[in-house]
Length: 403
Ligand code: AMP
Ligand code: MG
Image (cartoon, rainbow, N blue to C red):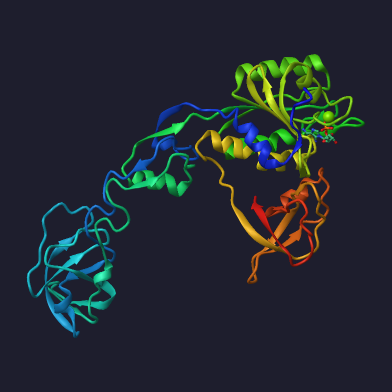
């Protein structure tokens, strides 16, 4: 690492530096069947009005509103109009058309009376309305959206409801970003796969599973590598393979100051480091740079740290690579319901439960905040963004990132 390499820098500065190595994934056209959880690489406009024609919101009768005033009123039943009816239907004065939900409104009608408010005679020839009819029971052409209206922008992650909207707009093929392949590599002699029997001094490797989930959540493809022992040759081999196979590399562990922090060591000697360490707690040790021209995030090994640093550092990078796409970052303003430990220099990311029952959103600590305590993260609704110098006193306010 050169003497000019940025060291121990604020988070915003670190994000800016990562963006210089922003990725530009290609696009591909997919069927709407495959669209869920993909990220749009072009804006989508409607191919139709929604609804495409005035139609009934109720099963009932379509009538002329003025004629239905001052009930009870008797009408001659003209015909029956079902959803999907393709004819040009009309009624004249004194007539009512039996109509189903979603069926087109006949000419001459401008309101609907639901079936519950009607009495039909035994011959099925006349209907008596017990109430006046309601114009707002007609769903008007284009009331939801109009043809050519842009409804979904580039970078939109297609949630279930947005996938339905694509279909309602008339799209069967959708242009999306190709997922980035993200290598996820854990390091450490002490790591064993869950399910194996732990020997003395060993722990279960947990980081790569959560990090893979975060990558998928952002709409990309994790490639989980087997954990690498603390050995420079093994690490080099794995990083080389990852750089060949993947667009981005994420490692966990081995980036602190220790003699056996081999990710930092190998990056110093053989890689490119753009910065090392950021002013956040937990999770200050990360580094960023490139290995064989492939961007690499070296995340800390502590399980909570690797996760929160992904949320605040890697997620903005991945979102920027897909025009803002992927897991949205939602921030809220919370009031501290208890005092929190803060720092004059670091952004403090405490795991909090947010009580939404009162007028203000209240933030409580999830309990013991050790950076190895995954449960403190599991219990959390959000992370505080306590700025450097914040007093952390009870009743003061800060931003929080929703998890
Ligand atoms: P390191 O950054 O390698 O010094 O690791 C910091 C702490 O996190 C150590 O206690 C490691 O045992 C632990 N750790 C590192 N990697 C993982 C992992 N993949 N899963 C669970 N714990 C880990
Ligand atoms: Mg280690």
